[in-house]
Image 1 (cartoon, rainbow over the protein chains, first blue to last red):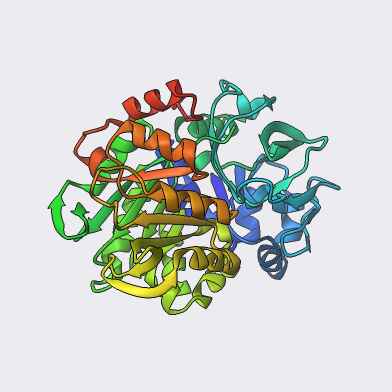
Image 2 (image 1 turned 135 degrees about the vertical axis):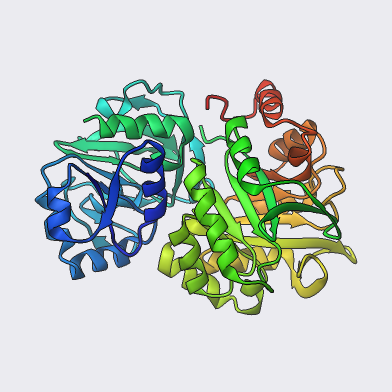
Length: 193
Length: 253
């Protein structure tokens, strides 16, 4: 069973629908036991970082996420919350990706970065059967800087982490659930881990 | 490179798709779900659903439709029409909408925008602006272009950006339904004066119209309805044309 973590700011419906379209059973939960017993965990996200962190702390989910040993996929805000610190609301984040800072895009071009963009580099299991020229959908005003865990790079204003991986923790800044067939392939790759 | 977005708009009334010509003569152009899926297959980059009856009819019908759309399609979509409260936004996002578009309620109570941005983030907040060129100035109108607000368009776009809008959907009432091309002057002025993405709307009648709005202004998306609904310009043909003109377009889908 795939469990999608329920926290107030997340756009839960989209991820659930995407998994259903892939004929994958899933449930939405904030129950610690349910999450820890899941085959895989998805940590979705649309929202604002500091209020999301407050909610996670209030529900003790911040501690729980560290204990997850099964594959977990953070999406968009999920990726950012897995970093160490975010400039959005100047909040400490989960630190699953230690020392990684989430920064605000400088206003050199339109912000948020909204729309379809390709990769400059990709590596790892999440990107099997994906080409760098493939476009995926982004909508974000903050980005994780390039770091040791970066597994995909996108260039907008400056190169940033399109995807990251550390052990069982995977994350994408783009929305695979909203990235048409390319996104479905990336979700399939995660489900196949 | 970030791609320019081609965005079909589906005006919804009583659960069906319609398109007003200059917002008056409304014709029926089909089932929104069927149409939406067709657009996705054709390579639409995003969809916008505007519920033109939402202000006077029950919200539940719309929520149910949004839920079905979200189940069926795998690209982002925006829902607008009659959004008045943070709760309205919450309901639509929960049903699966990626973004909401707010129009007249933002003019009535601009603080609504910051409330939405604070609660859900700017990235899900589109501010729709209907603009009309009158007495040598672009002004903001509401209620399908029938009611003047007295606001100057270039003032209002700055204000909505400051209040937390993540994107502006700019419709020229002079051009809408005319198929004579986008309102390049105001698209250029708005897209250069704000730092958030701007979608041009109103007036698309040919492939070259998309090319000129992308080449001559800083808009990052272009929206149209009837030319797509009635098959006058198939999206794949449009995208192929734009790619040949060296405009960054998503062609691998």
